[in-house]
Amino acid sequence: TGWTDIKVPGNWELQGYGEAFYVNQPYEFATYNPVPPLLPEENPVGVYRRDIDIPSAWMNRDIFLHLAGAKSGVYVYINGKEVGYSEDSKDPAEFLINPYIKEGKNTLTLKIFRWSTGSWLECQDFLRMSGIERDVFIWSQPKTAVKDFRVVSTLDNSYKDGIFKLGVDIKNTAKADKNITVKYDLIDKKGNSVATESKVTSVKGNGVSTVSFDYTIKNVATWTSESPNLYKLMMTVMDNQRVVEVVPFKVGFRKIEIKKSEYIVNEKPLNLFYMNGQPIKLKGANIHETTQDGHYVTPEQMHRNFELMRLNNINSVRLSHYPQDRKFYEMCDEYG
Image (cartoon, rainbow, N blue to C red; front, side, top):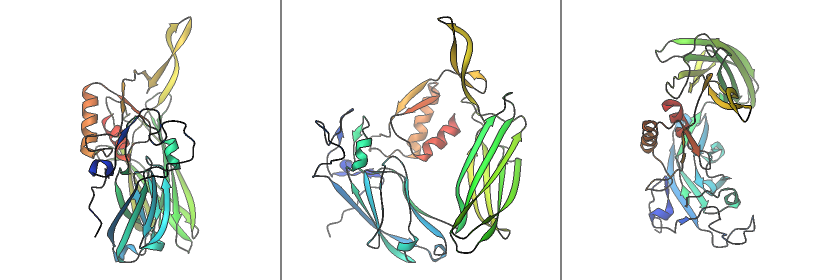
């Protein structure tokens, strides 16, 4: 009977629980004579609990809990059993929850400490608050699927042709070995495929195999702040010619260099920042994840921030002083 509802994402200090502090470089919990890794004995804790439903079709898949950002130390429990712990409030944490869940109704509990040993590495000059600050979601994936991938998308020395390299790590969490086909398609904004290839790889049970591709795209549409051209990359995983997973990703082709210019300062050539062979002046702004509602920034608010920056000819952002939400980087790609 003691439970109350709270808005998630959201900071509990702005919903009637505790006090938000603003300090610049000191620690709000140890303003004088800090002694890491010690923490205050009075350390506020927020306990979040809700029921989740796991569909029967997911029970033969890998199921993950994704915490995109929670401050500061987070314990995760499902059906009363401890799943894991994370402290890195501006990076996502992900937990494989199959051993703890059952089909149908399950109880998810998060226990969040306002301060953790990770707080000694998080001393940003903004309002210090706590809680679930980014999205929380559960997602599932086939037992044989993409574990990770790496893309290189740069230009040759003429700045005309695109150099594309792709490495895909395929995991197999099933016990049996499998022969898996991995295919990629690179699609331009008109919907035309400009590059495609497929390869077969053998993945041992509970193992990982890497597939690599490379291709040169003639007269590629380059990415610049003025013309942020993006290609759609589609990675497809097939088991016995049956499509089991498709992973989309957007790719831009650009080449960044810092090199000597024709300008002379104090009898020495001046180093300049070049984008695709052209010297660029970086006109930037600082940004913090802060709105009138706290540290959670909605996609609509992000979009408006980018719109205002572009209207004022801002082409770069200083992230002060932590990684942003994934959606932020996707919008950077999209809006230049």
